Amino acid sequence: MKNNNMKIKTIKYILSVLVIIFAFTSCEKEDVKNENVNKIKSENEYLMDIYNKANNVFRQIQSVPDNLAIIEELDSVINQSKLQLNKKSQNLISRKFFSKTENIINQNDLDYYSENLDEFIYLTQNNCSEQYANYINKYFKENEICFTINDLILNDSLPNNEKISLILLLTYVENQFTPQYVSSLKKVNEAACGRAYNSSISRCNRNTGVGLAFSGLAAVGSGGLAAAIAISYVWAQDMMCRNDASEDYYSCVQ
Image (cartoon, rainbow, N blue to C red):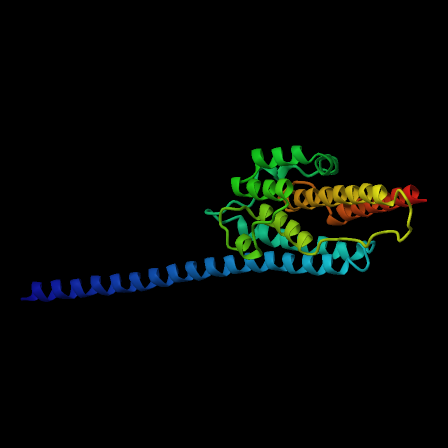
């Protein structure tokens, strides 16, 4: 009888311990789950910060195109987000933070790819996710943006540097910089001059689009990699390109 009582007490003790272990394990799992939800939410918020700031910047730049201080604000937001996203992504197993382009960070590369569209597309096809490469090819070859900000934010297959790259391209296109026709002069050769000007502006748009996309890929470098390529540099090149186009036009029609 005594032995039976001991057995019953032992069984009750074991069951109590199991219940406690189960309770702690469940709480632990719930904590991990909540932490992951918060982590994803925070990443999404950082990406939305970049989207909202970029939209605001490209909207403002319409009226003050040479105000690089506005663009530098966007540089700052991207750099701050880079630091936070990098920390949060270090422990993520299911999502890669970088595509292979993380090592492409110098200014010479930026200048080269801005002037060589086919090489930039080739770069993305060999160093980025398939979906990113498809998005880039679709835009630069067919002039079509086939994604939204929600598509980017919620897409787990795109590394964060590719998302930032596409966000910059998306906001640039949504607020396309289209300066007014530069002259009201009526000359015989105005039509030809106008065509040449529009062709030059199209080239500026293309180069800036490549520059922004490339900068997004490179602007989230990690660890010991060099500092991010500044969006302000891309925009300074854009302004030079547009000024050259305008000067050529005035020379042509006079």
